[in-house]
Image 1 (cartoon, rainbow, N blue to C red):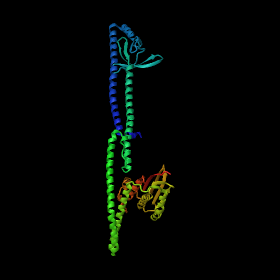
Image 2: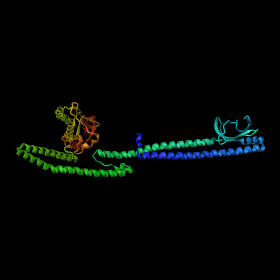
Image 3: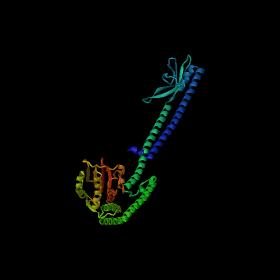
Image 4: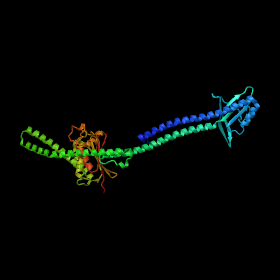
Amino acid sequence: MFLNYFRALTAKTVLIFSLFFIFIIIVLSLSVYEFTYKVMKKENNRVIDIEYEYLVKTYLKYGPQQLYLTINQRSKNQNTAIYIAADEYNDKIAGNLNSWPEQKIDKDGYINFEISRTLGAEIITHICRAKTIEFKNGPKILVGRDVQPEILISNALTNLIIFTIIFIIFSGIFGSIFLGRYTLAKVNILNNAIQSITDNDLNGRINNKIINNEYKQIATNVNRMLERIDELVDNSKNISGNIAHDLKKPLTKLKSNLELAALKYKNKNNAKYINQAITEADNLIKIFNALLDIASFESEKKQDFKTVNLTLIINSLIEIYKPIFEEKKIELRFNIEKNLEVLGNKILLTQSFTNILDNAIKYSKADKNSFIEINLFNSNNIVNIEFKDNGEGIEEKDFNRVFDRFVRLEKHRQTEGNGLGLSMVKAILKLHEAQISLHNNNPGLMVKINFIKTNQ
C-alpha cells in the first residue's frame, strides 16, 4: 500500500532531493571530519615535538640527572602529558608512565599505545601518541600525550554524520509517504469525480471546493469540457429524434401506398419486389420508432411509475420464453427470490428485459451445452438481476460501445438487428435510476442490473 504513495511525482521529488541532501551532507561532513581530525592531530604532534626537543636538549646540555629531574617535575599533576625515562632493560627511572610500551614506530615517527587509568572505582583505557629516543650509552625517553579527546571527537563526528544521514533518510521516506498520500488523495478525488461523471453518462460536475489549488484549474477546465460535450450530445440526440419524427410520417405513408400497390398488381414478380420494399419500409419505421422511444426515455420523464414486482415480471418472461428455449435447445437456469419490488414502469422494464433475453438467445451457441441463467436477488437493499449465457460474448474493450446507438460489432454484422436494442435498454434503466454493466462470463456474457429496493 505504501509503495503506491511513492508513485506520486511529489513523493519522487522529495526522495530525489533527500538523496541529493544526503550526498551534500556526506561530502560536507567528511570535509569537516577530515579538517577537524587533522587539526587536532597536528596540534597534539606539535606539542609532543616541542617537549621532545626540549628534553633532548636538556640531556645533551646538562646530562641524565637533570633530564630525570626535569621529567619528574613535568610529570607532576599531569593528566595529558606522558613521560618516561628508562634504562637499557626498560626499567623505569623517571616519569608518570608505569612501564615502557612496546609498539612499532609509524611512518611519521610516532608510536600509538593504550594506557589504563583509574577513575574512581572504574578503570578506563585511553589512546596515547608519543615519540621516543634512545641515547647512546644512556637512557631512552618517551614523550607523549593522551589523545583520547581526539578519538572521542572523531567518534562524535562519525556518529553525528551517521545520525544526520539516517535522519534525512527517514525524513525523506516519511515525507515522501505523507506528501505522496496527500497528493494521491487529491488526485483520487479528482479522478473519482471524473470516473463518477463518466459512469453517469457525463451527468454531474466536479466540486472545486474539495480540490486544492494545484488541481482547481484542471477541475474547472474539465467541467467546461463536460458542459461542451453535454451540449453536443444533447444536440445530436435532438437531431436524431427530430429526423426520426420528420421521416416517420412519410415512411408510413410510403408503406401504405406500397401495400395498396401490392393489392392492385397481380404479377407475382412485381408483387415480390413491392413486398420487399414494404418490409424495408417497415424496418425503417421500427428504427424510427425505437429512436423516438429512446429520445422519450432520455428526457427523464417518469411515466406512470409505481411499485412493480420484479419477481412476477421475470417469472412471466420465463414462462413466455420456455418454448423458445426448448426449440433452440438452450438450457434455462434461474434462481428467483420472491416479492422483490422496485419503483418503475412495468411495460418498459419488461421491454428492457426482453431485449436482453433476445440478444442472449440470438448469440447463443448452437450446441447442446448452451444455457441462459437468470438470477434475481436482494443484497444490502439493492435488487440485482443477472442474465448469464455461454454464447459468443463481447470483448471487454467493447462493453461501453455496445450501448451506443447503431453500434454493431464486426462479428455480429451478419445477424439481424439495427444496433438500438441495448441503447433502448440503457435509456429505460437510466429512467429507472438503475445501473447496468457487462462482465465476462468466461465463456459468454453476464449482464448485471442493480435497482434500489422500494421501502416496504
